[in-house]
View: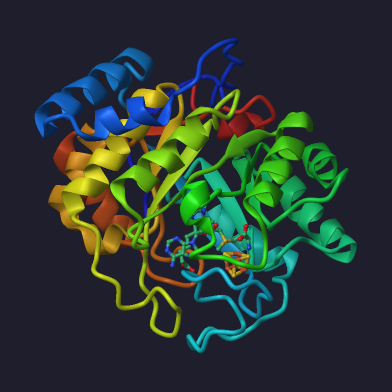
Length: 345
Ligand code: SAM
Ligand code: DTB
Ligand code: SF4
């Protein structure tokens, strides 16, 4: 497979978002955006997007599950929770060569970021050495690195930063007042604590949530308000559309109206204007027209490659065809630490 040719070189990695002294988003203001006539909301989102991302490029991030299944947590959406009968088998952590082969392939296909995910409540100290080696080696390939390993203890974020990690993904998943409907084995505050450790270690934050879990519009607004009120707000905001997996408690819900998903993306763009808003899980179910509306609403990042962690994602070839059809360029990052031959300048 070839890398997309319609790339735009940025000559810098994703910029860090600055602290904002007094900026907060009251829930009522976020709700008011959700309630706008659709075209007015899209117009506002386009204005924000064009102001902050004049190149209008789309970032390609490839995911790899480095440790699949057997997770002790009870997240109601997750096929990897051991307690649900979903057909996902628990596997051991991948070896470094397998991870590097996948990263090289992702880079050859045009991805600039490689995200390593583990089905852990939190990483054990014995896992950290292996993950740090993965991060070091993937970074040496000239890719942006991201990891999502669950909750971090004091010091672990620093260990990952020292190994060369750029981003840590840890989602708050939903609004505080809906959270207990979905997860009982960890608290909302635990998630915020981990995000604080990630920030303090100087890592960039990738944090978002899932919609379509039976929450109300106000709770979708609540999720986005929580994210926007983190100070600074996350550099990357993955907006996942629930992938309903048989065997999980959330399987069988009425799917979210696709236009409500587009609205969610648009509101995220307006209230976190400098963030990469990632159209994340659930793209297979959305189809091309809804995805095109999401790009119009300000989504400028996707998970790229035929698999997310355990579930399917559109084929890379189909994504390239869609981006080409829409005339969308892809981001080509030139990383400070990238070897010369990886430089896109
Ligand atoms: N175990 C770690 C944790 O929970 O933080 C990292 C991996 S976990 C799979 C990462 C995120 O994937 C979750 O927080 C959730 O937002 C998302 N996710 C998991 N299953 C999903 C599903 N079925 N549909 C949409 N998003 C999902
Ligand atoms: C995120 O917000 N979504 C990704 C990534 N971060 C780790 C995970 C989606 C998982 C979808 C279900 C699965 O494939 O297991
Ligand atoms: Fe485990 Fe993460 Fe899945 Fe929750 S989302 S069950 S913590 S893998």
